[in-house]
Length: 118
Image 1 (cartoon, rainbow, N blue to C red):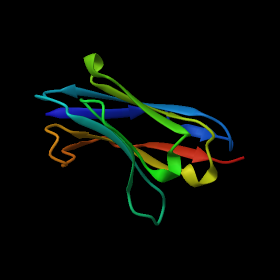
Image 2 (image 1 turned 90 degrees about the horizontal axis):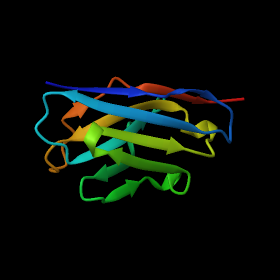
Image 3 (image 1 turned 60 degrees about the vertical axis):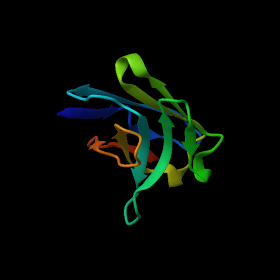
Image 4 (image 1 turned 180 degrees about the horizontal axis):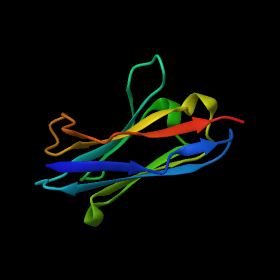
């Protein structure tokens, strides 16, 4: 069974930066796409960014130009560099894994809280 663990959340003032990390451990045959979702109170969970093993990258319009997703395939890790943070970026951020590239996120982390506030 695979285990997904996020880290790096915290409290940051508007305009600040944070880098989230996610590592997948345990029994997993392959990893095609890794992504970051977020969910703010009272809102639906939304896909923020994802990166496939072939290099295809997706960003939500709301974070384009501010967030950067990267991967270290040797470590089964994915990162999210978040710059120019805004209060509306406040949410619980989840790491997700699509093993086979079929569009199904089979594995999820517990989430890491990001709060943007002065």
